[in-house]
Image (cartoon, rainbow, N blue to C red; front, side, top):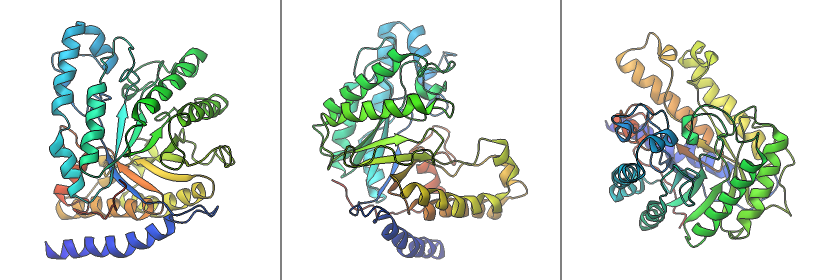
Length: 375
């Protein structure tokens, strides 16, 4: 046990420290920024059935929209209220802070503030999240996880199925309004460190729609959020190197680009053994982040230790555990050269490598971090 702790301490104090120094200076000469090190509070204010299946008990609904639609209005409100009161609590924020992390990424659906039936509003829980984060010296990156019409057709957008966000100018305009509402409501919180304009617009959402949306949403948010206090975060739309010369100073300030990096979803991922997986995480992703760094501040808003079983083929017992730890360490060394990272997700009902908390307890991830308070 002591040898493992010494290895983790060495990694954190040497490799992490050196990487953080690299991340503190932009290629464009921007001032140093504090690293964001945190977790996503997934499945709380934007439901995902695989993360928290109990809230779907007795229903075959695939997503939050359908769940709320099929339940009576009062029943839906009661069920989500119970879930929101119990899924993430004050003790969870304390646990996160006790690990030395300094931030959380908070995914919310587009019905969290304004009336958007059949979704159940959740302003009380949103406000509680900021309060509990503040009590534990945690910054909050607020992330619009789902938009009208769905920006990716996945359940985490609120409604699975058709990709319809970008096909309707009304949907896009409505999303700008939602962003302004979130900015206006949350501007009072001094631990708001960033507002992410749209989570994971799919790779085939046209850039000539996505980029103007980002510009319009930026200006809507900046009416309420100070440029020196709150970052505006863009997701890369799975095209991390197609944002050159976009939203630059002096018209735009404190803009960051979010990339989500996983190796468990594609056929190519399944073909790679653990040696190739670790090489990609430690070298290719570092190169990608370096290229992004030359234009906008990059963050890794989602990542995990999860791998397809095929990538761990032939590995059992200690060798399997060592492989997962190596993958985690390779990722962290690369991500520490960005402006910050957020593990997906803080907890999963079934545990395992998708759960930050479980991964820490299993020794896949360091037990302690040096996040340096943001608030």
